[in-house]
Image 1 (cartoon, rainbow, N blue to C red):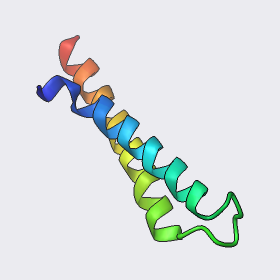
Image 2 (image 1 turned 30 degrees about the vertical axis):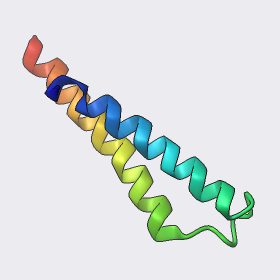
Image 3 (image 1 turned 180 degrees about the vertical axis):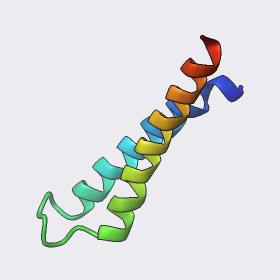
Length: 58
């Protein structure tokens, strides 16, 4: 289960970012920046965890 966490973080972050953009009608002035930032941080954290996992396997 732990090996799937980076993928879950990246997919959930991307999904939340798309929902955030959709709720703002894709208008950049209406985007909730805190929510968008949190979604992007989830994606970045997923990539960091994936890199750590790949580094530990080698």
